[in-house]
Length: 343
Image (cartoon, rainbow, N blue to C red; front, side, top):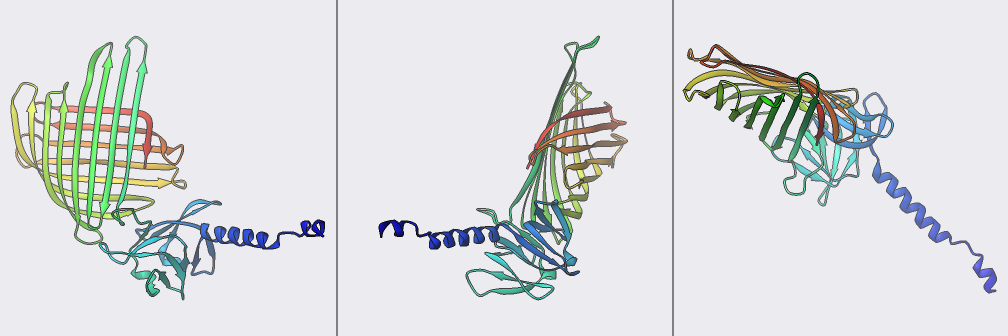
């Protein structure tokens, strides 16, 4: 009898394992129904700027026009914002009739219009709608020939946003030697605080400092404020313009000093291509003094990043720094190829 009992197959245990596996598989996939009847499965990354980004195993990150979405489903814990400030944390998204979705949480389920949703994102541990992104680019070049050249460059750019506030921080260090003689040695830091007035318009305050140990203009200090406009800012890139009134202070290598007011236009642009493997970027400012201290100034960079992994990239860029017509002119052009990390 004991031998017969030992041959019994453990059906209850098998059924339990299949149920757990089936439940786990369903958790891993979100579903998006389109108005044309198509259905896409993957993981919802973010919805912002009119684009829903769905991460898939078959096509990478897919950006879906929000106007084409009929409804959607997700078992993720998501923050759904119907304005720029407040949001509702949903433990799941449940499909509803076309043009709507149901937010499931601890209370009564709530069905909302898709057109009323401004953002969908993973909530952060402390500040739920906090987003932080940035890049650190490193460039090192050693050349041994008739002229030995050592070139170092570090470029940091990061941006954090919470509600109607956005913080922008940039820092850069450049140093170059030719035959042990320094031809470039400078560093700069810049901080800007944006307060959004609505979805597109914002007001910016900015502080900047640059120290140069080689050029005629040894120190530059900038403080400015003015309005800006955000054309777009989503998973596929961003573009903004700001017009500022700046107070600028120059200190020359001779010890002389100048200060003046200037009108400045700043831009910040980046765009992802080829499934977010290539990034085209450009940022900088062009300014015109209100007094006769200088004719104009330009500080700009443009380049490409190629993502080797989710966090590592190769980059190539060109930089231009001009101050024309002042007591000590500056005209620098730099090209660099390097390695970077991003988040």
